[in-house]
Picture 1 (spheres, one colour):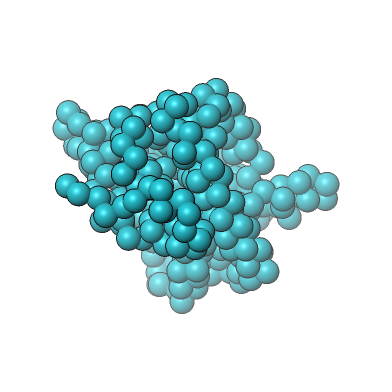
Picture 2 (cartoon, rainbow, N blue to C red; picture 1 turned 90 degrees about the vertical axis):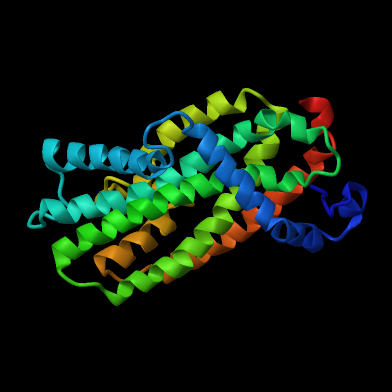
Length: 277
């Protein structure tokens, strides 16, 4: 295969043109992402189905734990099913984020052979983890939709909020992937540190509780979590509540800043990757 890509000219081009170059290589990104997913489950009897089964089992385990063992409720009179849907719609975007963040820190090291080729578009490598993450999320959302139909008996127009929420999420995940891809290539210990941060961050993200039920100071701290508005948008879509438009707009703006900042960080590190890895 011949790459229509010139590394030297690409670095001298305006940033918007370099970012647009990723779209030019979307077919390559698609093939590499599918290859990574297949390699992850090679030899498994269910193959790619594990990409859908794993998040469903993970979400199901946490839902059963908090709904039936801890007997948590959204409100004193609310049903366990409503709380279960609340947890599921919060866990799905969180799982996608952790998947992308974890994979991004390892991607450049795993593809060090490709890094040695100056004509290869390295910008696509950190983004490959997004395919598996979104594949799992789509499977989870289909399950959540079926669960919502059982509970409510109808499909609400509020599901249309999934469109802007998902688009903003993709921008956020791309920025995260580029930033952590660069940092992970330079600082190898970031993977271990990230695992600790994600474990703690899960409990500072309103997945199993509502911010309205927290003390004011704690609620403000949790409100600073950039994922809080995203989870709120997903819940508004499935629970039929009013979305926080201001929060979603702030998340979209933050995601755009992260996208540009992550790309700039990756571009600055990219020229040194062949020496670092």
